[in-house]
Image 1 (cartoon, rainbow over the protein chains, first blue to last red):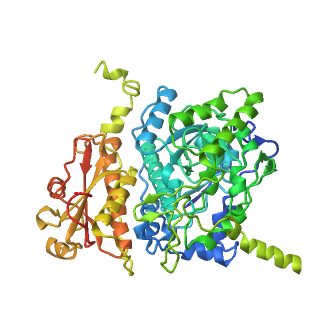
Image 2: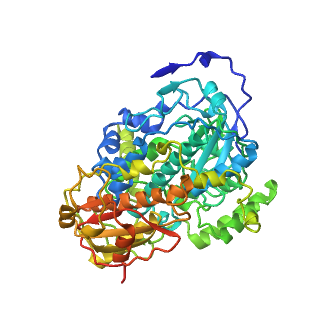
Image 3: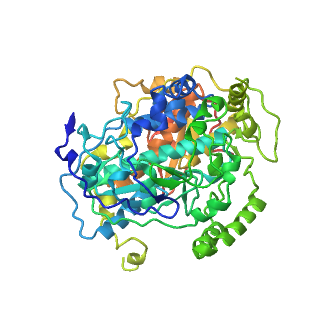
Length: 428
Length: 189
């Protein structure tokens, strides 16, 4: 069922795009993101070429754990819990609506509920139509249940009017396991974290319906909502950097609701100042997809520009060994365990007056390089996996490198395909 | 109760009690049942090379802890503690199950509320945790190339047989029946 809304062509009466913190600046006309033009959607249609399309639809992980961690790597999708979360029927809105006398109290309650259900942190933002997908919602590939009651096609403005608040959740994956990035251990931390967040979102949406209020999902772009909801700031690597967990967080699909809430404010944890001097992610990115230069204006927003295509194109080349790169996340100096000395370090930037932050950030970067190394690597052992001993596709083990762990492939050889192409082009 | 009201978020949250105790108006607003009733996938046709049984149990223990569980134990499958499933007509009987799945893996999860008393979403959340852990353990075993199926059991009897003594803050729900070669008892016992 498709309902065409009459108010779709109503004149816009919205305020300018709200402030999203210091790490991004809206300098021009910001158009809503067309979800059908996002990397996975382009890839599903085969627009990124056969190898990537084949990687998306036809891969089966060599690792038994990898086959249950994400449905796309499975031999049988029913063995991945995400299949069943996506296909779970959606409940009805409770006709006995819980009255909200004080939205502030309800906000505190919803945040406590979300954390009880598994979220690492929660933020709320007042919805602005610019943050909603251009075509109304994220394309449905038919593999999950719909949001109940048919697909409602209304304008972004009307959606923002109906559901004035967006709830964004994050889930922080295991720090130690994440240090074995470019390895099956890091993959497990990443994928199972995503599953945990999916179930938390599904249960929280269900709880809001139980309170008697409506929810809409797959309609909002996660990053601006997370920034506006004060969950973190955007780094040079294009990832959300949070105060407690750094960049090792999943950011799922925000829930839009008409439950009366109070919006949070963007935060300043000094990411803008730190990313200017750090460049660790850009220097270690295996595909050189992260800029070492200054910011650029993309879709009216001034931010660090990522070459998503080179980042994305790595995947079929490495799928025999691992799924998720995460190098930029793992080496980010903000990504550390959630302990007191990390809190002290982040607050020392946060509490330094902005004009003096260059001194603090340089000092902290120097400390980070000395204690954690310029390329963060650590041998991690988990279950029968060992990031210091990598099994090749033929089953033979790579020589042990106990000092640093083994991460395949390294920067120099993951770029080899592009370098080869460039050489051939220049010869031609 | 007066003192308890000073604990963070207690009396200041007037909705909390309903979250813990009020049964859901529509059970589909929680995804627990969707996971519990999820159809099982196939057994991977190529069996993985397994480590020694003791090591394998330690691996499963690490997996269960990582997924949010608190303890794991293994016992022989006993028809006496198998309960009829939701779909008894389509399920193999206890005798057949015991023959094909000689071992039972029992996983405990942390429980802030007792699901038998607290009927709200928070109270029932432990069922979700338990279902998720059991689902993933069974699916992992199937992907290793062995049988792994989640079945309802007499939790107290199965946990005791597996060497688990779930405390007040722990819950045991269904169990995973398998033919994976594992040692009996708890890891390292």
